[in-house]
Image 1 (tube, rainbow, N blue to C red):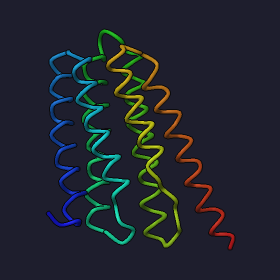
Image 2 (image 1 turned 60 degrees about the vertical axis):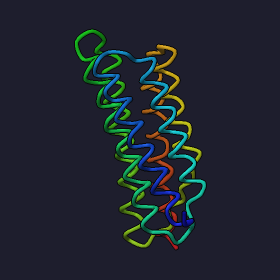
Image 3 (image 1 turned 180 degrees about the vertical axis):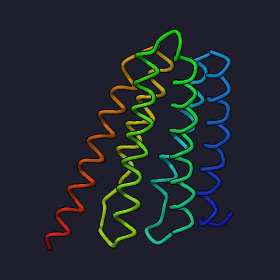
Length: 166
């Protein structure tokens, strides 16, 4: 197997785990869904660690996997909690929106030529919080993810402002 194929294969494995986690959430089995989400997160973080700096295809596939994780897992969590636990549902929706905002700022800033730093720490924390929250039944984790991603958005926006001044 070529080195170039490792990141896409990890993303495919993550996609399968995300599909399993989403299905398990939709049938209201959050603990196994958390384990599947954790497996997906591990695969995506491994892909981020192994990503080569100039591998544009790998970067796109990894970004797709990241959005898939947020959209499917947080979206399913918001859906199943909407009637029984509106507080949890609102937290999942805010986490989903703030994750997409952080991603948008990074992508838009990058397309305009600004150097927006991105590592594997923030996604690893996000995957861990979501997964651990599902496994342990913690209702606060979507809100923690939302705060984390709003902070990431602020940091990324400040990077754009700093480069604009230069």
